[in-house]
Length: 73
Image (tube, rainbow, N blue to C red):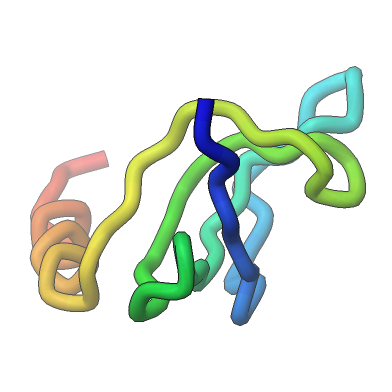
């Protein structure tokens, strides 16, 4: 299996943390030396392991923000 290269360019915010110390974060990440994108996923302490997540372009993040702002919570 090919190794995935990533660089966290900016940590935008921690959304939650579980009892094992893993945290769900919104970060700006460059995957395999590509342009950085917004990413939401679970991370182990020190970012040595990661869970499945979702990666969004800036345009997708803007659209998601509009959708969330339109929700009646």
